[in-house]
Length: 338
Image (cartoon, rainbow, N blue to C red):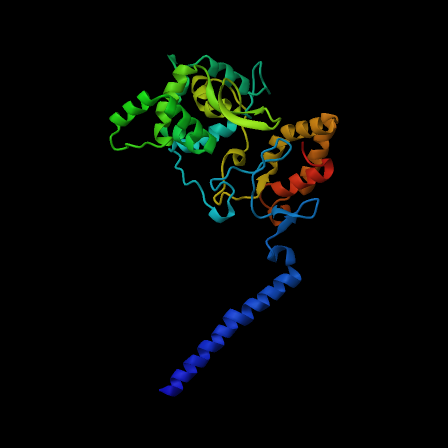
């Protein structure tokens, strides 16, 4: 029996050495010698030589000088790769898509062909009516409670603003607690609908949004204030505007501009998506560098074409560009954005 046991132990040790020592070491050596870039995470360095990201993982770019990646349900967190899992019937999915479309979609035909819809959304919003009824912000919150709560949770300054409102309206909060005895100590998100209903009455035709101003010390300060125009209004109320203007003929947009990938971390966008963003990017770089917009647009378009590639050497699928690499190329060409 000891002979069989000893053979089993020897076989176990042999397997451990092969699988846990020799094999990993061989793979590591091959990777470091023949594929060092890929083996070390495909890390990309900026103009100053510091690592700025990986070409395999998307990251957010917010400045207009940059091309932007696909939306991310994981907030571009590599440790939390995930899809939103929203069903097609879930309004949160529709709201996310509508929020992306509002500031960028254009008219396809008619007297305003090629013009942004955004100014019309703002003008319609300021009338403070939806389907003939007043207080559009209150209707928005009543129709879509989850979206109103998501607004409160989206940023700490939003919750802080609602908390300040709570202290200024104790009677309304007390009545809400009486009507909802199961929530004796409501959080800011619990009071989201009540907050927007009251805000709509006190500030008709306006929406709470972040406003940056110069403080007494000369430094920029951001606070939540009632506004009647801006990207928040264009994003949040595009869907309601669209319902009242279903006859408007709007341009199509690339699908990957508004839809997240399964991982939420797709580093590439289609060339069609990049070309859709080209006008914004070129205009901003032209303004920063004080150069002709047409010339700048042509240069950036050449950069896109030079860095675009399709799967299997172009034999299948459509062309893609890596967002991080393209943005680094822009920085190399024009310097850091202002």
